[in-house]
Length: 128
Image 1 (tube, rainbow, N blue to C red):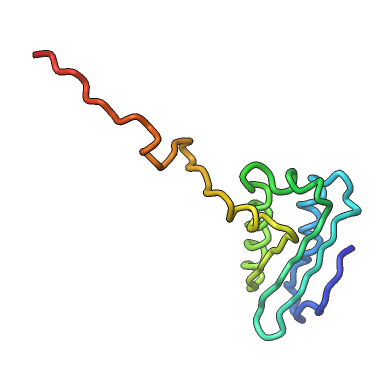
Image 2: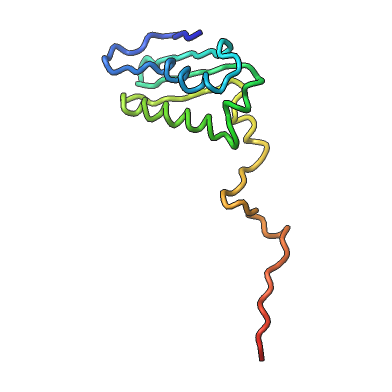
């Protein structure tokens, strides 16, 4: 159920952040009824906090491999907020930040940045 702790600022360009979050997250959920979205608007600054909660069993699909799905959702929301003149923070309860602290991300080229575990490179033999 979408709820709002404080009403959006009185501007004609205030986007429906809760609706966009529902549109982007529900396809990943087995039980869309478990989705909870809360939007809170800042009183002094044009800042929006969007908090999302859903069943633990849907976490892997919503986050995606390496957090790609949730990052894409976050970027879409931030782009929408920027066009409206807001800054946006997306919080997922029990989110990906807690899981990222325990391991370092793998480089995009698939190679380890630590060369100590690999064998040293050898020079080719010269034909003398």
